Length: 114
Length: 111
Image (cartoon, rainbow over all chains, first blue to last red; front, side, top):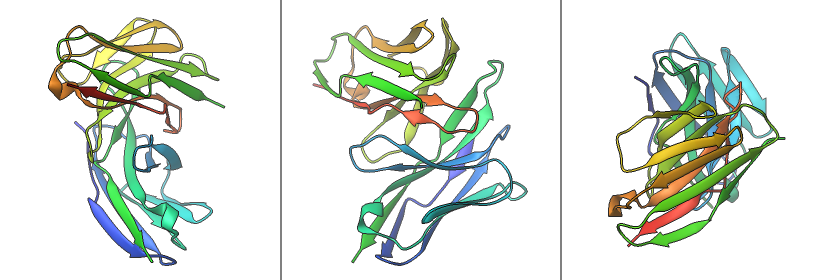
């Protein structure tokens, strides 16, 4: 089976840096993704790590360590609009189907305060 | 670019009534498609996924079913809705690099 663990809530101050961690256990592994979801909206793709290391996209960076089954999302220069839920997801092969499922963590609710 | 159209945006249905939610994908061929459900304040639960026409895999036993009559069409159905079927239903497409794209979702309330 697959499971992902991430903190349920994080609070940070506007302008600060916050790191959201994700650990995973999967039967197979083909990369770790991050998604952002504002209240009432659909998740939107933020970043993907297929190999170890850091991927940077503007104020957001994502890191992966496959040996540790661990990754994190780093948000810099936090803005109020960054208040949202953030989900990590793994892409792993489903048994017998040739499909690559996206299995999500339960999400981290980030609250950015003034 | 890939886009997913999902409708309706909101739906209120009485217990015991049927359900049909439709999702269509543009900008890609032979996509892997998914139906997720999200309860209020909770994570995303995978309900069904499909690797091709007529190919459906179910992740959890439930009151719902799915069908894929065309390559770019994925339908979620129920013959008789239960109160517990209420939730936010999301259709998604998964790319090669885990770059999933979600539809805008359907918020279903069963009363």
